[in-house]
Image (cartoon, rainbow over all chains, first blue to last red; front, side, top):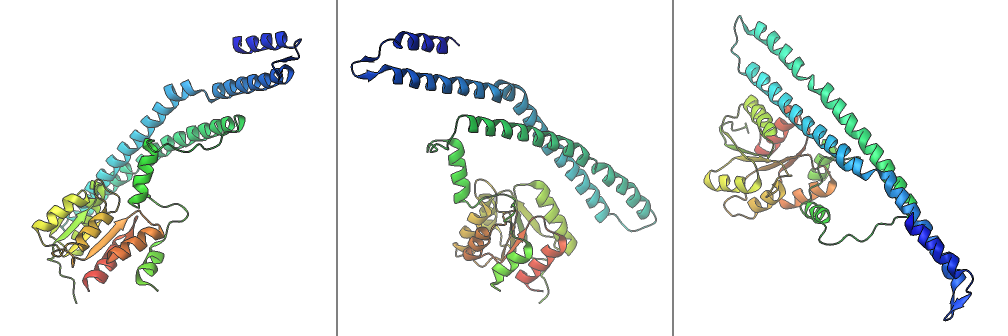
Length: 188
Length: 127
């Protein structure tokens, strides 16, 4: 506010003086006005991102949710594997069927992790959508373009290293299916 | 030719759950001598100490990936003949082509089932 007030004061003082040293002061005043408007717009757009709220609440919440998903899926996988191993190596005999039935209940209980992880992942997805929307609006408001990424940027270095090692992780829409891989390998 | 169920197999994966799943599937198929390693460099050390009949390796591991392990194995006179199956979530064409050029014997994309693992082992080790 103080910034734009000061600019207006300069503009008012310059408005009666047409030129100083060959500089068109009216034009200069208009350009300062445009810059001031841009700065106001930029500040409003930055405020609309709610960066402190993201840093203070949303990101830690997402980190917590994802860590919990890793932990819960890991626990569930271990419980399911333990049960499967017990059944695989259980001796035949009169108690076998009762044992299988008991272990089946355990397997079903272990599968309840999906409800919890589903809820947490949905919450993370919702937050990411909200963040995406805010960044998109900000980007449009400031007419942002992608700047060249500095070579010392840690994320750029990480991506570069992953690309060199051909590490992409689980595939998206361009992922090959097993039969396509087989064809590629066998050359048919 | 029947599968040699006594042949030692090395499973290389940084996820213990996956190691456990592959171990169990191999056990179900009748293989008893199964070792594991959590990355490529540990696997290389184990391969120098023991002769394996088959290596089943993930791709994405630190510090040495499965792809780097494959290239090291194929570049090592004592190990180059070891059958090598890549079991990975990396399912881009460039990965499959790179692995093929490096000398992979077979390539399984995750998630996979017991039947796929069995058929690829049979194709590589002869059934």
